[in-house]
Image: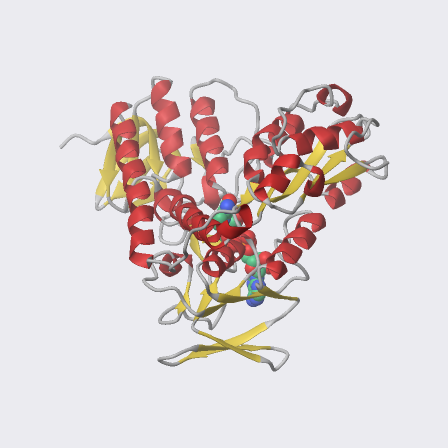
Length: 457
Ligand code: NAI
């Protein structure tokens, strides 16, 4: 049998891997994509898409429950969880079908099986060696746990939480990062009593402190309890409940425990170490052109240290395909990648936090916080929150941080402001449609340009 070969062989068909495959094929390169499970990876099957479907169902539940405040009479009879799963699964399955068609339409050869990297130019899948002039490692990530904290029964990761066939009466969420806050938000909307335990001193600790404060206040209003600065000691479970003990000596009880303490890279058992790939705590070390230490071997997505986000994976996949094709793309600025937590309310940001901006640019940094109380559309939607914008010494937007329902929709404009390095005085002359939540960005720009409109001076 002749050996299969291609210009580019990609290990892993998630966001990073499949975007590299599509772009490489668009650029005339032949591509073999190796996937052991389903094309689309975590994002499509166990991450972004199904969780956002749950969050949308949660929003519908909140709207139904709160309809009377808008003068609309509807009854809220509760959550039909199998109906929720049907809706969620139908979204995933439609997108999955579309993706399979897209990949086939680009002439990408998909090889099903668990592949491992054997050295520059070669991967092995179920005993077959496949040759690739260039190899892209894109094996993704999985939920992490803590030493001694075993997943099973009433102790869940997001994988089990996504398919849970009941709404717990109460739940403890370990980890107040993105996954923890999103599930806390869904379950609370579905009627559960939630306690979030976060080891650091604030929720969403990677965000600007402003966002943590706003979010904590909003979750408190929703009766979601968060305990920060707490240290997890252990968990026990029986047929009825989980019992979570803290180092302080306190014990908490609930129906389930969700472990959301981060995700770790899928790099063990993939041959990377053995083939001499330089690693960094189980992540693959790359330079800013996403090259590993071995010739013509690249890495993209969650196995590369940094933000573990699907859209970063897409961007890196496109970048590497263009690099291989000799297009010399610009290196990706990680700070320019938008970040969103899709809870109720949402947290969205791009660029630097105020702390990072002051570290990099000193005291010549100024900030404005515009409260959504002054934004007509936000008042119509009855959402609280605010937009904080950070200006650098040259008048450029260094960071935008937003909290409020639907603010994820504003992060597109915010990322343009940041990535284009546009001067606030110029940006302040852009007109925002009224009434939209986008006006909050306009108001922040006007204030930073020294001519605030709906803000008391
Ligand atoms: P994360 O890193 O966002 O949050 C984990 C949290 O757990 C941190 O706040 C950390 O301080 C806390 N923690 C760690 N050990 C702890 C302990 N022993 N006790 C209490 N708290 C502890 O990770 P998360 O939420 O698990 O998400 C994993 C990845 O997936 C993240 O990189 C995230 O960005 C990504 N993701 C992105 C989404 C989005 O873009 N909307 C949605 C879900 C996940």
